[in-house]
Image 1 (cartoon, helix red, strand yellow):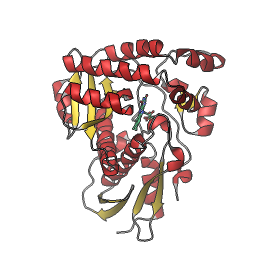
Image 2 (cartoon, helix red, strand yellow):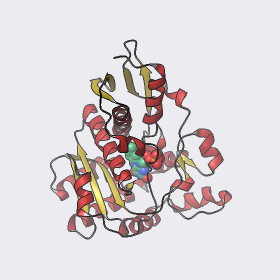
Image 3 (cartoon, helix red, strand yellow):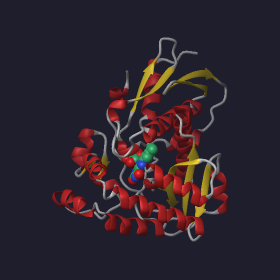
Image 4 (cartoon, helix red, strand yellow):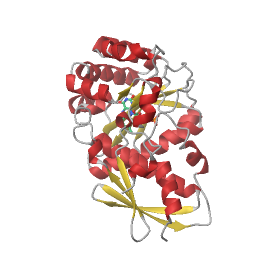
Length: 313
Ligand SMILES: Cc1cc2nc3c(=O)[nH]c(=O)nc-3n(C[C@H](O)[C@H](O)[C@H](O)COP(=O)(O)O)c2cc1C
């Protein structure tokens, strides 16, 4: 069946709530002549220093694709996704059963929560609900958890000595809420899980804190209160990245329905040498694409999005 413009706009609205590296929102959407939906990468929104091969950009496109599928399922459509180079064509069939309702509701509340977590462990039952293909859970206190922690520190040391990386990060920092709202993208200061300080001090405080020793100190506090690290593996191909994004999105939404907070500790995946070292150290088959920490915490303010119409082609 072909979808109408009203449903198309609802689906775009759901898709753009998805996570993306530095909140770049690197996706575009089109309603095709035959009434399908096309999800495309937006290569004007790349991060050359952080993500030179557009790996994370395509994972973000996968996240948006999964949000569309989940939202459509909750409205009673079954969906079929067909890759077309680095885009995805989604076709819809009316079904008499709405599914994924809880996950769909979580689309508008999910957030990346960079606060410190409170040390509460996620139950085995909840882990059982979150488990899926290519998603590994490592509990705080285990040898593997310590290995991941070491690799985060190693990668952080490299990134914090890379001026291009730091410059790119600063470019996406939004120090005051007004600027964040106006740009509709980037990393609002209020979502960083750092103590609130007056706006006029934020830029210089951030510049001073962007060094290996301070970032490692912040990270270790945040990691200490986390219950688990999660490693998502996937293939190093365009379709592998999109598939990784889809599994990531579903995991994040499931966690949201269970009241579990998630944040990225992705540094080792962003540097191919460290990523290979981690793969070997953990003795895993797949290639690590995403690392999350999970646990329990109070919520942070939500991040902003650009206007829905700016994503439509
Ligand atoms: C592929 C990918 C990589 C990401 N990497 C990081 C990261 O290294 N550090 C981080 O704090 N957040 C990371 N994020 C989270 C984004 O910054 C976040 O999704 C964005 O700011 C929007 O906020 P939201 O998730 O709360 O909607 C990543 C997200 C994606 C999809």
